[in-house]
Length: 74
Length: 463
Ligand SMILES: Cc1cc2nc3c(=O)[nH]c(=O)nc-3n(C[C@H](O)[C@H](O)[C@H](O)COP(=O)(O)OP(=O)(O)OC[C@H]3O[C@@H](n4cnc5c(N)ncnc54)[C@H](O)[C@@H]3O)c2cc1C
Ligand code: SF4
Image (cartoon, rainbow over all chains, first blue to last red; front, side, top):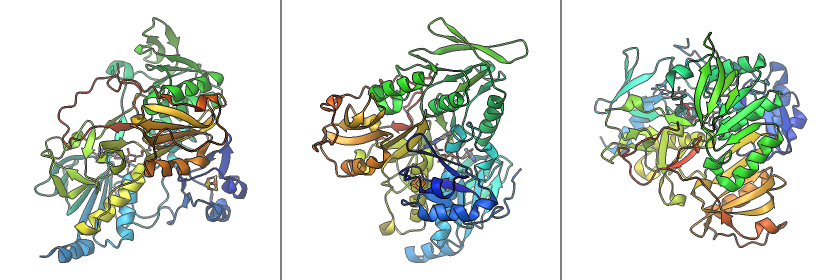
């Protein structure tokens, strides 16, 4: 599952790191580091983290990869 | 045909072509579909990969937390697009409404979005740039190659240019325990974007984390060994640095060459567009069917005197793409201006740096919260008696407040009594930006005057 965090919006509240510690981790006092592609096993926790983020900064794939035929790719 | 009917037809069966299949291109495409565009959508990208996110390349990827091939962007929705990846657009025929591709194909459009972004400025000496061990960092391939080399634990990494990307690279290397030298032409890191007062804090941070930081120097030459591997760099102060990995972080060049001769107002500073993201032609007349978004755009902003602004920021690419897509499908009275408040983040040496507004416009700075010495503070930038930007070091939660000050054009220095004001915060000082005509690592915000044409600019190479 692909994900991205809008770090302009993120306020470092760390709810995500608490709910899905294998995907999100605080780095320093208020910085956030995350794995841009999480394992399938994280699906549930990731959904919880995205829902719990107080500023709704976490975007999780709405489409399962491979999303669609990507012609001309290599 | 009247306007409404033709727009209806565009929405139903029009042809939209997007050149540049990265962050801005993807978000624009999704927005088009979200708004009910049912016609054909073609995504043209010269990289052979589906859209991926670049910020992790200098952070998670170099820290070894994620592979460079695992930063593809999540999708908001299915696109039902035709993807032409791995093939660059090489020309534009505005009169015929066609984009030419490198493989000889021509793709006709009713609406075109240009989102070709920027590329890393290479090391200016071609033969030296070719040495094994010399890198730039902009693409997934760059990230993969650099991460591989760092995993081999080089003896010393040299970063040339201490802008955001260069500083983040140095930070990741230190975190992995690698020896790092940073060479910066200006007096401190980040000065092009944040000025000398904040730059001095960035310099301390680097040194405290064990970076061998050399400011006020230029790298004059890179030297290779007999096998073509880089082994040393020579500096303008006469010193040299033994190194086996060199990362050139000297800012970016706009990807507009493919538009040369097309008649579009495109040049080394980017593509000028109006507040509604419509591109200008070289005569300064706005086009009706060509839109621009992301790093390649220069657009006027109402809050900053309508000067053309180029913002090499993630949030700008997303927001401008959404506005461009909306406007493409809208009648003139329904169009929206791109009024996004400039904002970016950077994480380095354990500090979360965030900014709103346009610090580079600022002439003065006042520390309104925290303290420079603690490296936890908010600095507020002033320009002509008004608050124009703010930067926070580990103080991100306060930024929305400062954003409001900028939006409501509050006077500078800000009138509020601060909670934890310390001596250094009592009066504004010179923000100490370098002379903009002297190139440094390249600020990621560029103000470029009022002319939609781009013909008078001369570029002074950094080295
Ligand atoms: C290492 C790194 C770290 C970053 N970190 C941050 C950060 O912390 N915070 C922040 O706010 N921003 C950051 N950024 C900036 C952010 O990634 C960019 O603002 C964003 O990628 C801009 O998106 P874009 O779609 O406009 O352009 P790009 O992402 O540059 O995409 C343009 C695409 O068009 C393609 N293209 C170019 N010419 C052609 C052609 N002729 N035909 C077809 N395709 C073409 C390019 O190859 C590219 O794929 C970072 C960037 C980098 C490189
Ligand atoms: S929960 Fe949201 S605001 Fe908090 S750290 Fe995670 S992404 Fe940031």
